[in-house]
Image (cartoon, rainbow, N blue to C red; front, side, top):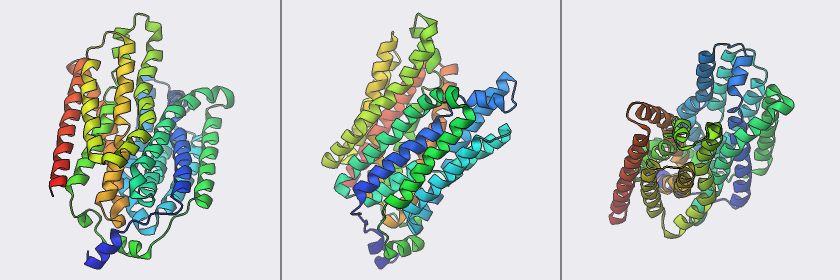
Amino acid sequence: MTDTQWDAAKVVPESAYWKRNLVISLLGSFTTIVAMTLLLPFLPLYVEELGVSDHTAIVQWSGIAYGATFFAAACVAPLWGRLGDIYGRKLMLVRASLGMTIAISLMGMAGSVWQLVALRLFVGLAGGYASGSMVLVATQTPKDRSAWALGVLSSGIMAGNLVGPLIGGALPPIIGIRGTFLAAGGMIFIAFLATTFLIKEEKSAARKQAAKASGGWKSIPDKGPVVAMLATGLLLMLANMSIEPIITVYVAQLVPDQGQVTMIAGIVMSAAALGSILSASRLGKLADRIGHWPVIAGALAIAGLLLIPQALVTASWQLIGLRFLMGLALGGLLPCITAVIRHNVPDSAAGSILGLSISSQYVGQVTGPILGGFVGGHIGMPAVFLGTSVLLLAGAAFTWLVRTKEEGA
């Protein structure tokens, strides 16, 4: 990049409409995440309805259908981010909400399991509303309010992950599985209309020109902080997801009444998400005041230490409490990760680099359950907590070293 292009690229077009954009992005992200996750409770039933009868095949196809969306999203997130840098972030939200409206509505009309998987892939390829909202809010919000705004948005995204399965469990008995997909499509269509007519993005011809001219990753002057944030995003999702494959079996060892195992396992799974929802905006506000790096390093260290007693619990309430506290600690990571990347890359490359960040988080989301299941099955379930603890503490140390180098530069 030339000096002129760099000067244009590093100007962040803080929008006069940033508060309105935050509200619409929050509501849109919440509704799209709800629509993406509401199929969890009834996915195996729908796979069976589509003609798969063998129990093993139902489980396998359910896993393939669910994972297809995240696999596709991880592959295209940097591409959509790059196109957003060039053509505008609002356009990416409009595209995502319209694409998801069509795909999720069509899921209610699927005639075979292959069509369901294909549509789940299409949701991942065409979607990305929540990640696109992160980019829009990060680049349009004043720097001294960015971590707080991103924390509010993160709370809405995590709330969608909690509410989606609840709605997915309640609606099918009332309107049927296919009707539930159509209702979800209608909900996203409302988000599409709100995004189209209410979000205002201040466009910059200089930014567009700089985005076309820049090489994305090559345009970053100091790649150290960005690499640290990509690794932190992966660790965040890995830590959240590593326990998922073993939680029901682990809870079964702690609960005398086996009839309560699934209910308590669900509470354990939700406890961390609830803690993160409650803390995300508060930790974001704290990061705006004292700096992002101390919050990131502290959150990783505290979460790593909280994993140790989780390997030693003797009652389910202890595990629930520790998972809730871990969620409180980790809640500030996602907004801080996004804010650090926003502050360390030129605006013309913000979308593509934040897209890489989303991809790294999806890698953690996929890797976590695989590693957790393997370690839990071959070494023992306490080893899952202790191994994840070591990774988080190492991540805290690495983040602190990068922060020290930044301050010393």
